[in-house]
Length: 313
Image 1 (spheres, helix red, strand yellow):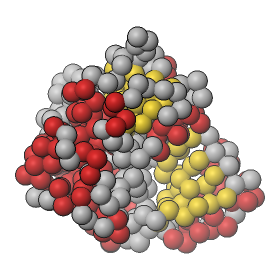
Image 2 (cartoon, one colour; image 1 turned 90 degrees about the vertical axis):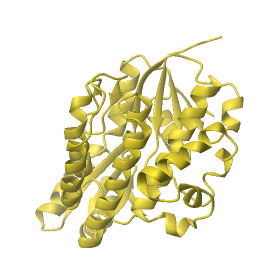
Image 3 (cartoon, helix red, strand yellow; image 1 turned 30 degrees about the vertical axis):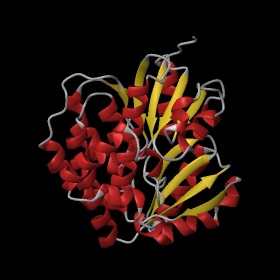
Image 4 (cartoon, helix red, strand yellow; image 1 turned 45 degrees about the horizontal axis):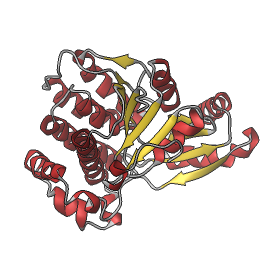
């Protein structure tokens, strides 16, 4: 058997949908819904099985739902022995960083769920207090996106780069006016904008109140002093010391997600197969754009655990 080094990656908000827990309800990991419900006060079985997609767009509910499916997928993959290689490092996109920290042994499921609940509520409250939105610029080079955003901001509109996801895919975040102005000028740098259906200007200074609230909770959290490497969104660097995550977790809410660079870091760490655990297949698709030589597979349901990993799946 070809046992290649593996990176585990976990998706963020935006991958949620009605019935997303259905594939997992008959697995041993479904008991995690009870643990997470007890920790957060939300009925995770209800969220994962019956809550309409429209309601799941609510930031706090979306984050808990995606986190729960991700940790169930990881638990089942470990239980089934289906990773087919040594795990070298973990990473998660935005919210997914908390799933990555759980998989890496930096946090227990219960405490991670509590942090996700606090984070989601704080982000929702910040978004309600200050209207914001996001859009993805496709086909435009990052340096030109940076320059365009700086130009729009210099003219008085609030807009920042929020996610650097892959070559030719950069998300911007800010006021509706700032994001609209950036989109109107996208053609000037060879790009076009797709508006995102989100509840706020995430990963921008608009989230400063949320970062403050989350920081208080992170300050009361005991992370494992040493854990498997987790590549952080904030600096795209691997970290094994749990003491850094209180700081990085606060910074993450107002800083860009450096996902393209994070995937390249995973490659430099020796990872040859990227396994996406959780709802959707977004991160595997991005990985193939970032590094076509890296095998990328998605475990978005138990059926995926039964098949041997295959490039491009």
